[in-house]
Length: 253
Image 1 (cartoon, rainbow, N blue to C red):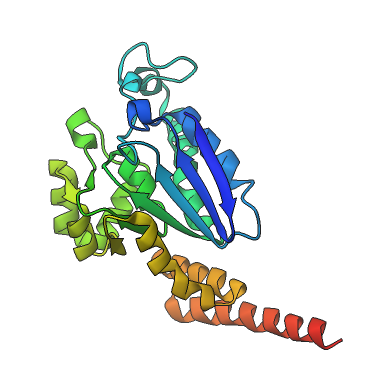
Image 2: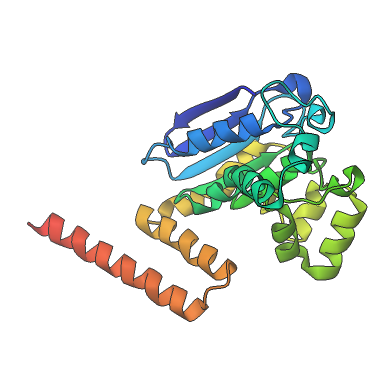
């Protein structure tokens, strides 16, 4: 997959650029994303992920489900033949492209239009925030292919919807539009003009000092992953106080 990147002010944009197949994904594309994450400029405060053409991403390339697979990529049949330990390592490698967005200091935002299905929706869910068009169509349809969402999507949907609604959503593979996504807290913004919605969401964040913005993300990420909130707050505030003291000392000399 061709992926375009651009730095504009404090926004680093990652654009999936295979509109001819609705930005379908493959393991090779995930490797590209990881390489891009490693080169994100330090001056960027926000990462914006979007898709070119009619869809954000329609999910895995269906060639992955054929015995032949894709050139240079393992098929699911190849993967299924691996011993358990090797298969676990393989899946963990694929998950890196999805979990790394949460580990980066920048606030990551997915702009979702058209379809975001399966791995496509899981990629959007891996961002800190989602902004969707009202008629965007998001779904985790892995069960219809005999699979389950294993790229972080199950955990994110459970976090937002709770047990019963997450189970219903994933088990049925039904679509959720942008308005429903906002109503249940999956999307932070919903509007036909995604760029205007993006600015509405991030403009107030620009008032925060860069270190404080990154630390606030780290604080809530740690709480979300089960850390004691009181401990997480103390540790985050300690780092902020140290940074502020160092800033004061450097400017007063």
